[in-house]
Length: 217
Image (cartoon, rainbow, N blue to C red; front, side):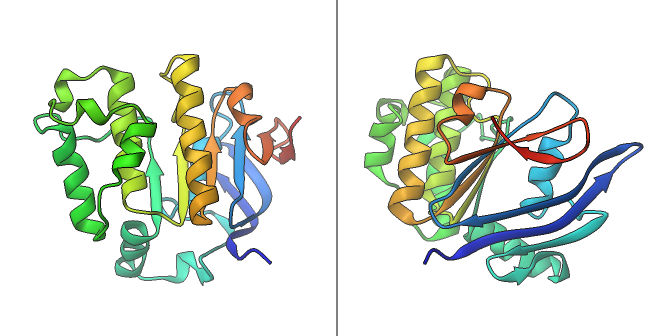
């Protein structure tokens, strides 16, 4: 039986207006989950709740068998550094440094070696000696994803990781992410507006106007 990596119960959240209510989701090893929704529906906020950055107004998140929002800041930071892989829309790369130097920093922090086969699969092996500022946006995104996967995360949280990529490169990136979670018994929660990318995942959900997370299609 696959281990449960994340379990969210009765999650509700609002800012100046309600975003979603009574969200329940269970993520097991090798799961790939896509969350769709219109702009402003709260899908990125939901991802941030699952990944330790926003505490929900109501509800409970168990992450790796621990009650996430009862942990200390130090414990949460340790989980982020050693167990979570977070792919943001912004790359957060050091632009004055070479691509390989960005990966080396992540490798040093996680005590994991850089996986050269991963660089080949992402088609960025020949870019390693170039500075980040010299790379295209799509190349920077793939370096960012390589940096995340190099730390061997147990759970990947991806916020529109293919949003700025052409279709061919988007499919390549999704293929690499899905291969990774199968190989490492990891799991991924993907936020996307792209239904084609969502269909590549095991399960898809959509944040609807009634504030619920419903199976899609």
